[in-house]
Length: 121
Ligand SMILES: [Zn+2]
Ligand SMILES: [Zn+2]
Image 1 (cartoon, rainbow, N blue to C red):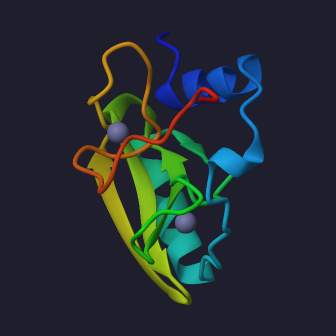
Image 2 (cartoon, rainbow, N blue to C red):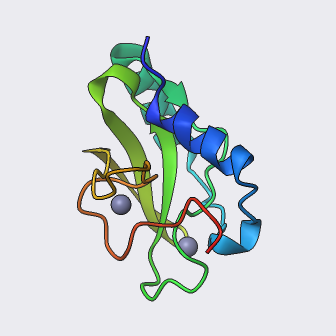
Image 3 (tube, rainbow, N blue to C red):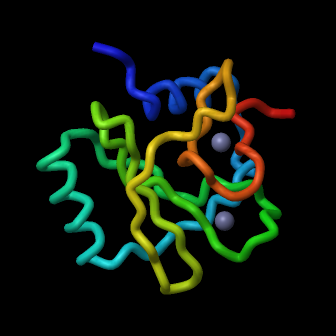
């Protein structure tokens, strides 16, 4: 079976020792109802819940909206992200970003801003 994008991202993070300060890293307060919705989607679509839901954007991202990955929907080629600001969370199911040819981007297709780095610059 093909390695999921999430696994490749996780491996890249470990291999290259990316430090925490290349990411915003803020953690959303996911409401129980949204967490349940994500689990329901995983039950019907397959995939894996994200073990790290910290914000994936650059530390000084301009927009005050954070983006966190809640689940990798496996074979569907999509992920479940939350766009969030303070206590307000929006759940989105979108395909992965393919802007980078030679390395995976941890965000969804059409995300705002540059692709977050997977390697220290
Ligand atoms: Zn953020
Ligand atoms: Zn990207």
